[in-house]
Image (spheres, rainbow, N blue to C red):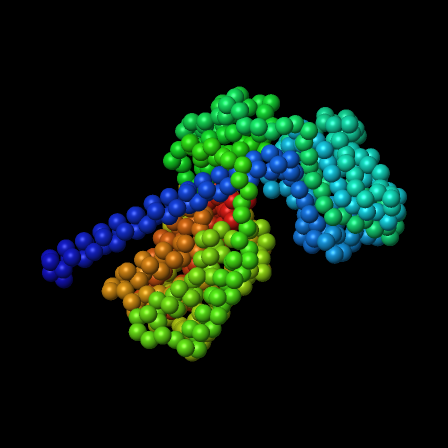
Length: 502
């Protein structure tokens, strides 16, 4: 290689490196802005609820998974009964029903427990709570159940609380677990429709309850900067400006352990009492149009460059709407499942004649080794920023390999091949594919950056070998190591979409 070509190669590599750095910075900014918007929306929803005198914490029971673990703790069976759950005691011993708690509850300022329920026989309702220190307290006789009772309102401040050894407990304040404890005769049924926490205090924003957290709070914690909000039920906290998504959520979690109802917003934002609007019917209409369009494109494909662009859009629009559009919450919805599945099924249909590419064997042993280079970086990150490795279930490990295989098939065989058809240089197709892969992990900023860097390398490896099998193995190995040793440290979690904010 002469000097001119070497210089050209160096400049090309520098250009790709600069582009990669710019993309990584942009991904971090995108994640931070989406997280800031989510925090603002959450604060405005909270403010709207309390100003409308609606419960800030409310549980409606329609399916078993509306309970912790989807079942009763004890000898009782849970079944669905129209718009409620029916719990049947198997042997008359006490059982408990866990209420899902996203972060924590403020029982000091929301001390009224409202229950909509119906018991087939007489019994006792008790409560079990656990505070942030892990101490559990019980009130065994919080209320009486009878066939004539359709609802109960319990003032938690008037109950007698004891710990597991029988010693008195103080009246609960902030708790992280709340369970209903039911004592009823054998075969007695309890129909549970809803539970909510109510307050007797007016909730209004005031200048005295507003705290602007300084930049130091990101590294040292919030303890030194929150004295002014000690006895406030709903203080307003402004986060430091310019911090990333992970730092925002870390500060949010620290604040919520002490003020579950706190309004936590980005710097310079004043929340307004706005209830998020629902566009469910509009999204369903759009989904129907999307599915019909995919059917048309599958059987009547366009010709020329437009075909590749339309097929890329068809494969990605549903998954990106679900994930990057922050529509995937705690549980998948029929709409989200339809949109995501339609894009994946369309990719399968347009690539059905080339499925043997999925298990194409590499032609050289080097093509097996090169994809595992990111594993070295993952090991170094785990040593420097990780923790003791957690043992992952064997079934989860094998299942994730299959999922990694599907992801790399979609990225490299379906998407990247079409980018190669419409983009001028193969390197541009590599960068475009890596960006798409990162966006499918929105808004998890650190995970997006790691996925972008990893896919850059794996896409380059695919250009050499055209084999997805070793790349899927390398992807699974890196991801499982991150899950085992980096989650909770450098990487907040492996969750994406709205699940990242939980």
